[in-house]
Length: 187
Image 1 (cartoon, rainbow, N blue to C red):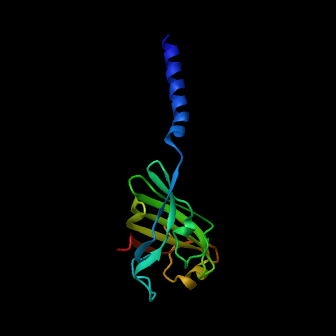
Image 2: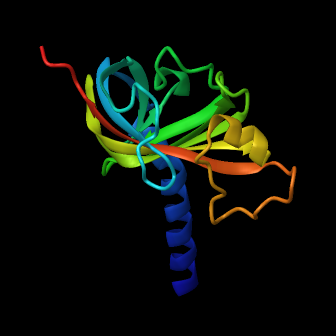
């Protein structure tokens, strides 16, 4: 009899775990933005990235669709995150957890250097449609030989997680990071 109860309990748990998502309902899509961002870009060593437009304020972005699954929000199309000056991003994702932790990455070819690029995102965002606001950091990497990368990003370094390339070998180079504050425009 005890064995029968164990089989019944295990079967019940399995059925509930399979059926529960059906009761949760389909994911919903919400739109946030448009929003503004202030940003400051830094070299890997923490010095200010040397371009005339750095730092910047009130950079317009969005709107952007988010798919809500439970308490988390997933960016539907990573291209909506990047403003009009960015290239078409063929691959990427961004998620804001129920507790507001933002994480994600995107890969594309730079319109400036022609090199493969990888951006990684970490931060803390609040989603309250149509608003989203908070702070996050974008870490940017370029793939190429030392000469190719340092032609466009002279402060680039090899991250600790990468092997130092032999002369002429390509590798992922850490080129800069950007600290952002995102906020909604005042009415």
